[in-house]
Structure formats: structure tokens, C-alpha cells
Image (tube, rainbow, N blue to C red; front, side, top):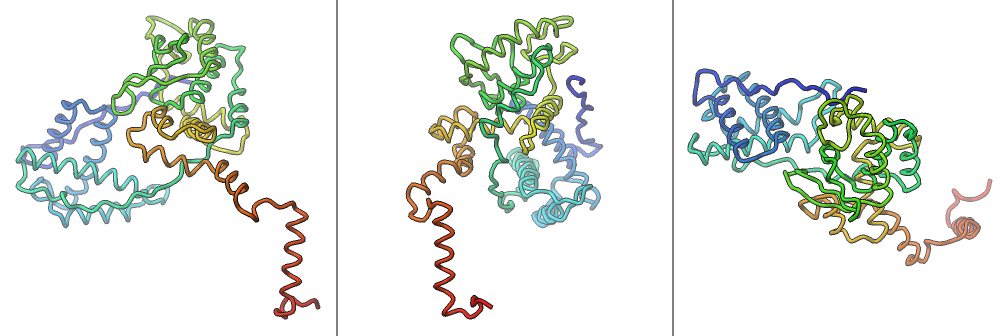
Length: 351
């Protein structure tokens, strides 16, 4: 399995000859957000979305920012709603909202810089976001089955076990785990330093003793065999001695989940959901889980309170008078109800 997948260069829109053209303003805006220390992932996303918008406008004869009006933006919003991908599926409302938020931020910048007289996107109504539950999480027993899949007698298997243990113990994002350095683990204190996580924020998270033990074993026995050439000081390396790639990491974890045959699908984020769910079921306050996951807003974390059905089920059993009956009692109760209903309901009479 190869390391980090090489992506093609992210080309900026062609500014053309018109300094007041839409393409030229997009280029200036992208340089501006770079100068404000936005992450490269955010810049790459804005490039993609604004290029798509500029292309859509050009196909309809709109090439300058001042020519974009509120009706044009609403027309683009309707186009996003009716758009279908190559597999025939529509864009999710979340994706539509992200694209429109990028456009709104772009025109807000132009208005503040006095590049346009008024902001046509200032009152643009965004589609309501769907509040979906996270994908199913693993039970502790299922998580153990996944963790047992790597062949720890081999260097790569030992590395993979350390990766899975880290995901399960800390709930790190895929990017955060890939960016871990050799010295980011404090084994004595049982902590892991996450550097430049989402939003370019550092944080320190606790890590369990078992995960620490597997990382130390990998670091001492397997990692020296994977290093080739100058050491990059990245904690997890591929077989070429390079830092692991994000796409490769997703494929790796997904294969182990499938191999475990737990009847569930997912990859790196599956362990993030699992950590939040098992901690919540174990009695952890949602604010501690928020700190663990690095969520900026509490409502992002509170969605996991809807997943923890086990606690709700226990409370339901303890408080609802008809929640706990033996199977025989349930059968007798149903039979009695049917017998009581027969005199009034001829449809229930015996033939």
C-alpha cells in the first residue's frame, strides 16, 4: 500500500484581463484569506466552490462581480438544489449550505473592500441544515474485535495496532492522528499533544495506558525498521518511511473494520463516534467529551446524547410500569386483550 496520495496542484481561477472581473476578485479574495492564516484545507475548499460558481456565472454571461445580483444568487441556489451528481444523487443540504456560505463570505469581503457597491448575498436565505445522528458506533466488544485484526508479529501490523488503539482511546480526527510527531506522546503523564488540529488549534488529550503501551512497542520495535533516509519525526510512517497519508489511513482502518465482520461500516471517524458514545454511556459529562473531541461548540457534541440509547433504555425500564414483563406475562397480556375484544368486535370472533 502506497503512502500519501499525490494530488494535482490547486489552480486558481484565471483572472483574465479584467481587474474588476469575477475571476480576478476571487484570486484576490483567496490571497486575502491565506494572509489571515486560514488553513490550506479551507483555502482549497474555497477555490473549488468559487471556481464552480464563477464557471456557472460565465456560462450565463455574468463575468463581473458587480453584475451578480440577488436574483442571480437565488437562481444559483435553485440550480444547486436540482443538480445531480454522476451517480444520480442530489447534493445534500449540508453541501449546498457550505457552497452558499463560501459565496456569501466572498461577497461580504468585496463589499468591505469597496470592490462592489452593495452585497447581493447579505440577506441570502440558506437551506436549513439537517440534524442527523452520527453513524452507528461500535460496542466495546466490537471495538475489541477490530483492534485484534492486525498481525502484531510484523512491523506494519504492530504499527496498525498502535494506530487503532490511538483512535479508540483518544477519538482523534484522521488529520490529527496523521500529524502526530514522535515526541507528542507523554507516556509518563498519559497525554497526547494534538498540534494544529481543526481550526489550527493545539490541545492536549488523555490517552489510555493500553494505547500508550502499544505506541511505545511500535515506537521501539517497528518504527526504526520503517525509517528510510532522513527521519521526518512523524510518529506513524508507511512502508516507504514517509508520513502516512489521509486517504491511505481511511482505507487501512476500513479494511480492518470489514475484516472484523461486526456488521458495521466506517473508518477513522467510526472510532471517534465510538469514543463519544462509550464515554457518555459510562457517565462522562458532555462538556468533557466536548473537550476530548476538540469541538468548538457544545451543540456539536450534544448530538451524541441522542445516540446513547442504552442509558435511556435503562431509565425507561426502571420507570415505565409496562416496560419490564416476562415473555409469559406479555403473551398472557396479549391473549387477555384479544379475549376482551371479541364480544365487541365480530372480526375477532373464531370461525
